[in-house]
Amino acid sequence: MRTVYVNGDYIPENEAKISVFDRGFLMADGVYEVTSVLGGKLVDFEGHAKRLERSLNELDMPKPPEFDDLLEIHRELVRANGIDEGLVYLQVTRGSDGDRDFVFPSAETRPTVVMFTQAKPGLAENPAAKKGIKVISIDDIRWGRRDIKTVQLLYPSMGKMMAKAKGADDAWMVEDGEVTEGTSNNAYIVKDGRIITRALSNDILHGITRAAVLRFAREAQMEVVERNFTIDEAQKADEAFVTSASTFVMPVVEIDGATLGDGTPGPVARRLREIYVDEARKAAV
Ligand code: PMP
Image 1 (cartoon, rainbow, N blue to C red):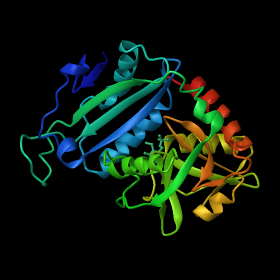
Image 2 (cartoon, rainbow, N blue to C red):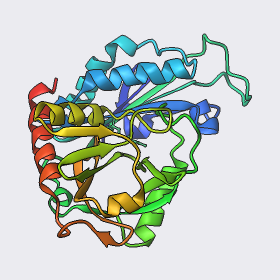
Image 3 (cartoon, rainbow, N blue to C red):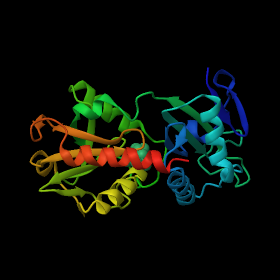
């Protein structure tokens, strides 16, 4: 049984309790982060902590009292649960003041903080990365502040189910004819050696993995172009891939039934995955 963290306490998962009035539960009034663990250490912890702070600020949500101790709490959970490769999930909600009301509770209300680990042996040597994944396109009908990492994940979850129903692995979302991002990852195509991905705005989540991968790509003298692209352009690309904290760099080999290249992961995606995993291991804390 896992040890989880709830508002200051490390407890067995079956003893954890959250109020039925918690605004995370009633209104999806909460934000989250997922940090990967390689070799028992945290990957890009600082990036995740900074994005969490930004999400809280954008929603006028108070910082939880343990904000400055989050690294220690992450480490303690990794240790207590013996995680070598896996994920640490962190959620902060606006808490509960004992009733349901659209108006925010007073700023003194304690934000709810929940954290737990997920063991994922083989995260780095993921067999899916050797084969590549298939994606379908779906309409992006999410709200307009996708840069805030809220727990409103119903539509992304439905998107994954739509993909599964069509025999694919994931979905890319399309708005005004152009790809925004994957259900839980940022989307890229590669054409003539150029890496193309949508620029940062309120339309997409500012991926922590995205920032690192683009930095490594530029350091390796690869050309990066931050602009929108369509599904049609993606289907004609040489390669495609997605990035996220839980999949690192994951090659995409099929888009809406169209095979990319020879249907196997391309050299740019494979190289970026290798660089990312190596560097992530080195810099993990
Ligand atoms: N976009 C969306 C919609 C996501 O849910 C995620 C992962 N949570 C990402 C992009 C990738 O972000 P990161 O690299 O920080 O995991």
